[in-house]
Amino acid sequence: MRIALLAHVRQRIAQPFMGGMESHSWYLADGLMARGHEVVLFASGDSDRRFTLDPVLDEHYERTFPWAEHRGSAPLIAHVDAGYAAACDRIARGGFDVVHNNSLHRFPIEPARTARVPTVTSLHVPPYDALHWFVKASPTSTHRLTVTSHTQLRAWFPDGAPPQVSVLHNGIDPAAWPFGDGGGGAIWCGRITPNKGTHLAAKAALRAGVPLLLFGSIEDRDYWAAEVEPLLGPTIVYGGHLQGEALAAELGRAAVFLFTPCWDEPFGLVAIEAMACGLPVAAFDRGAAREVVGDAGRFAPPDEWEALADVIADAVAIPRTVPRNRMERLFTRDRWLDRCEDLYREVGSTRTASAA
Image (cartoon, rainbow, N blue to C red; front, side):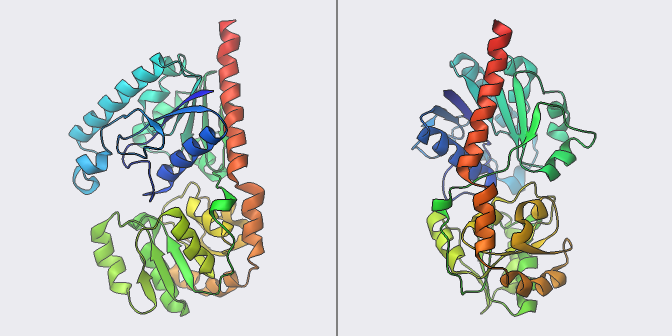
């Protein structure tokens, strides 16, 4: 199939990934290409050149409009709107069989556009006002939507989802996240920003007397300076922002993963990466954490870092085969890609039937 993969453009689609959305788009493009599909990645022009790129913007917009300074500003909105409008027009003329839309932008889900090129839209965030009502009006015979968890499905569609919407769990390549023997302390990774709860993981580790390694991009430097950096010391160490192979090695040496969402996390890709490496999880019971982690973890009430500290030892006691087996059963890349291909065929056949 000839597939247009339309990505979010806040960050580039390249390693080291700034977050789960960038990772999702990269691995989707890589996986579809490995299965023989012709993929064109519509993303920022500074994304990974291993892919066939059609730039939505010349560079990711965080570089042009730093988030802390321009969040939601009129010039930023106009800049992004112009890029997506032109990209959607090129897709319409490009002879694509299907669009996989990861953009979180309103233009690609307009019914007039999805009628021209069948579209699968993946929603990676809880509902928010700038997109919510456009999503509600978008399901048609040529537009399927996916969410990453049943928790997220209920958030987007509290009164029941239309038939064009389904749950599509994220998936990873087990070979890229090899099982490790552990033996170390705790580990946390992700974007370092208040809604990821980095400081609460550090406080929990200090209370539990467990050494903690922190990895990830420092997205909010004010938060880092005020809430995280003062907690660093002999047992709480920041290890930087690592690419996948190096991060997998660190995960494999750790004994437990701390998962501390302070928002309604729709999935939590970092959790299944850790589980693949054999790490049981000590987590806040928020968003989709319990749905994803299941019997591979122990849970504390949201934001209660003292309670999180208390369950770390219980999590460490979970056999390392439990998280690995759960990932292999539910969250592999092949399972994820199989379902993506099913959706492409379903939405494409609807257009074929209409044309007939």
